Length: 133
Image (tube, rainbow, N blue to C red; front, side, top):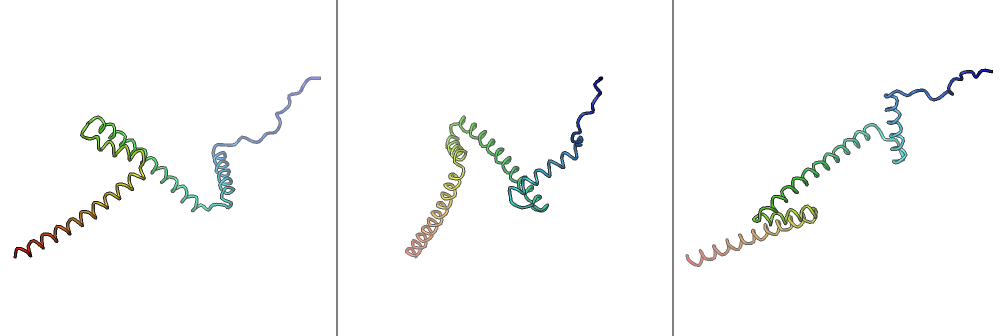
């Protein structure tokens, strides 16, 4: 008995590229809904996508700024008069939050001391003028 050519078993039909994208999007939506415990509206999804894009842009800008600061640090290490700048840059690159806090505190302290010095100098000048006249 000859073996008849048998047709391949029925399988799922071939999925086109747009259908595959739609299926992947539905799977992502389902995963997000399961993670959040609810379906996300289109507005919320758009807002979340915009927020993620802004965060990614901010991270990219931070990396670029860090690269520029590293280049400036390298240049300032080569030039001895700029070594104090190199120290500050190194501290900023190693401990950015702490360095910013210290810089703000130092700036405010200098402003307060400058104001006190101006008041004392003005008082001294007025007292000397009163003594002379």
